[in-house]
Length: 287
Image 1 (tube, rainbow, N blue to C red):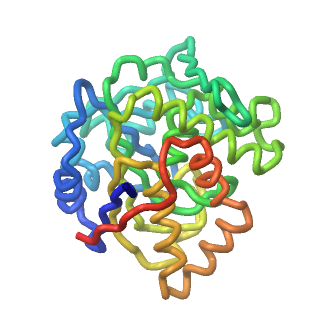
Image 2: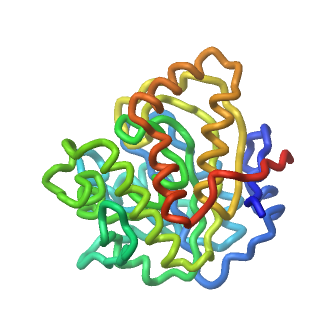
């Protein structure tokens, strides 16, 4: 049976919570809520007030990891300051998963490019995962959604370099593109396996720039907002977002599609599906 992806073209914080309740998945135990804290200077990331109703509802802890490049989030001290500046730590309990080492290592026995995933060690403190993703473009991956949050997002600072470098951290910016995309899929599979199905994914198609929220200088959104999607399948939800972009009649879609296609972004979804932890075929249920 195809996984269901629920979709609404109403984008409000209350609609996010309504759709979570509609999915009917109870996340057990202590819930890690993966968000993007937003690079300093970025104007497009989704703020804490937008996510507050659903985070409060699940009683979750906001989790993040340090970056592997210069900026306001590449050290624990700087990232904690950014989390406060952007309002996360004032609104929720916050856990910077790799604030202190050593990293937690997740094995990927069937990985195509990488066989280990280095994540923030505090991930061990959680029983389930709520992945809140802002769907948009990305300078290297073509687009960012649930799969990027599972892979690059949960990886420690070292783990991010490891994935970007397709297993060779020193090649963080020079690895062959498809190898990097396949490494992202490998890493995402390990996090899905770790939580044994106790995960829910929400993608919000709003403020869709060709650039990621990790960019301190990002282009403004290039196309109209589309909606909110929720599923328990990370591959299906990202595929559904891509399909909605392609189906859009908004003239700005071409700019976003050029970014996705020029980076072969769909290959992350292809590689993830080949690993078998989700499906590119889905049933879109309009809410």
